[in-house]
Length: 219
Length: 216
Image (cartoon, rainbow over all chains, first blue to last red; front, top):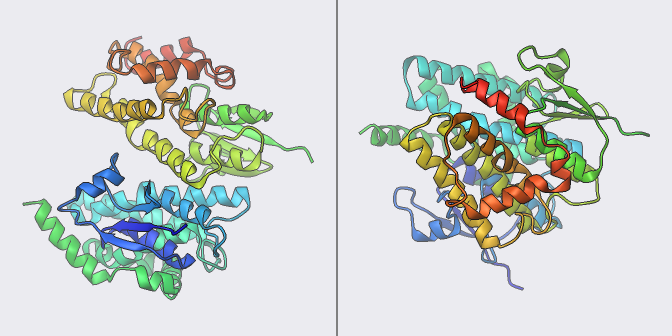
């Protein structure tokens, strides 16, 4: 049967970036469809009726939503293709899910405070972000990647936010390199991988976009 | 080697209950370690340093936190009655709905009770309506079909705790008339053997919420 795979995304989404990395890592061919988040199509609401958000993966007409969910799906549906993103050991697998879930729940929200807020709220966002990054850095330890010798579930979940480091540092006036040197080294290591290099968005583009978005939202 | 399974728990927690249901489905014996969250034990902090919350499952010294992660772990380790579907797509669908319940339904319910306002009430009703529609479309007894699965377990809060919260708050937002499918499902869920055996006593929960809402 001919596989039909459509990846629906918006270029700046770190969540979409996760999916792109996963597809590239496994070398899975797909069709790409860009959604304009300021002008969403009815197609998006058909394939993601509950959230009307990107990313969505449509595989032979069936849609899978929520980025971490999509990565696990890719890992399972193409389990014959290496690498595996999730470890085979159940305990290691649970730890990977825990940390990816932690990143999902806390990182993005904290980061928004840095570039959308000022004063005390911005400061608290910064403190929160650094707390999260340091905890995650602790989990990495001496390993080259969270997944061990190769990119794994947690690496894929986190690395798209590397594109946002410049934005966070500029708005928040701090240096991630200074605060989390090991994490920075990890990020640079990841970006040498072809799948990541192909998928990461240029940090300046992100900064300009967020800057523009702030103005647009506060109009 | 005998398995050592410990569950750091709080009797009334719907999240702890998810782990208990999963363990019960697989027929796993475990040691229940009741915690006092106002005075957290050194062990709880050691096993869940990031969140310092319950439930935490400790299996042969390995600690797993976050209820849905724990339930998937239990399904991965112990074969027998499955909690998640085998098919990757069906699995993705189950995970999606479990997360929807955690991300949208439960927070919306907490915002709408004990008091809430027009907006919070509308939000809670909207999220629950999505779940009601999903049940209607599926046309099965449970989200998992004839047997409960990850989604039913995640939705346990709605099946059991929501009713208690409504009674304690003296506010009925979710009615049989508005949510006929969810009402029948809830009844089937709480009476399902492996669930019934581990649900905390209703009077205890009612007392807890009445006190919390200042209506004791």
